[in-house]
Length: 139
Picture 1 (cartoon, rainbow, N blue to C red):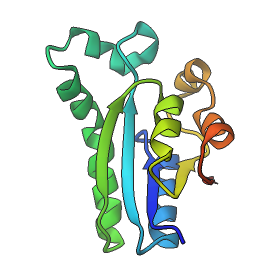
Picture 2 (picture 1 turned 90 degrees about the horizontal axis):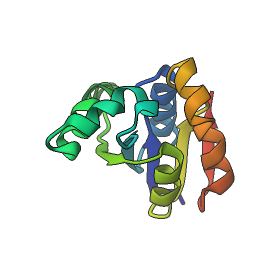
Picture 3 (picture 1 turned 60 degrees about the vertical axis):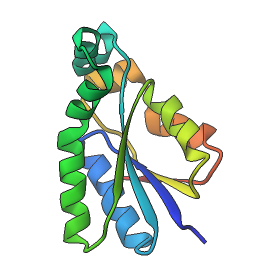
């Protein structure tokens, strides 16, 4: 029985579809929405601003705010509650490490901009291959 579900989101439509799927398939599940902000680096686009922030965690929370607002809207539309968390690091690594605490991961097939996909690689594929729990990839 699946009771704890991790749903990584990046603000993309695919992330939203993954959350909608998780809410539909696991209506009684404890669903946690995770947003990963890459560590300070010029290769991480928006997250490069972290390097200049006085409080990196506060800045990461700001970067995740719009994705979480949309996730809360989707949950409310489904009359369900979710919890949210933001972490710093390489998205695939963080997701795989967090997966140990869940029964399954529901992730969008791809997300972000084309540039993000070229630089970061295929996060969903990496999570699918390395996760210690089952992964559902939503298209």
